[in-house]
Length: 205
Ligand SMILES: Cc1cc2nc3c(=O)[nH]c(=O)nc-3n(C[C@H](O)[C@H](O)[C@H](O)COP(=O)(O)O)c2cc1C
Image (cartoon, rainbow, N blue to C red; front, side):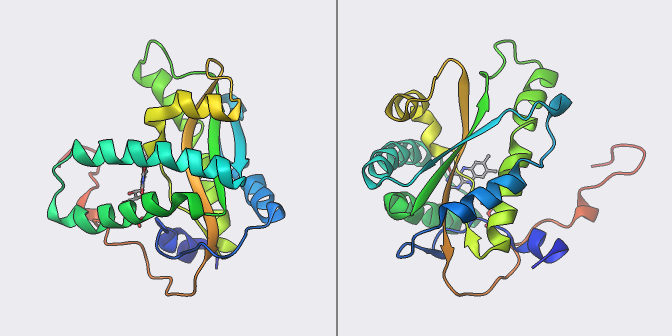
């Protein structure tokens, strides 16, 4: 799968993750090698990756994730169109420890203490393109993931658990990686067409 098809069918894979099949380190590394082709401010390449396959560690990370996800859910009154996504999110939270590889994507440094729009854009904008490249590369190989952040409520605890130097490294996303069970590669759920979101020359939204 290539080009527009890959871009429009890569989505949040949760129920389609095959929890019974292990994932090869070489496959993960090959996808991370594509992730590192992403752009970053002045080509800083701030990404660092930590792949967790050890079952006991996955279990502990999943417990933090579930607490974070639970807090996120209870702080929200979801719209009806968000319910399916949240149910699928709940499924992932309940099964996270069973996903064969949890890939923590980290960025060197901490978020800007003085968060001007420029500094924030530079910090997070220099890492999320790598996350998306990784997701696309996984999908092209028949693997899948979901971009998740619910664990970040417990970033410090997870840093301590895994030996990540908290003051020097920021966790940005947790990517549960597994083979995809057979199923359709339908485009991600409906998106508002760009024509409805785009102005020309003057803002007219
Ligand atoms: C910044 C960010 C954080 C996210 N955090 C979570 C998360 O913690 N847990 C989760 O299950 N999904 C998470 N998602 C996935 C979104 O729910 C998903 O991308 C969105 O609903 C679109 O899904 P679709 O591409 O399958 O249509 C996150 C996505 C983004 C971009």
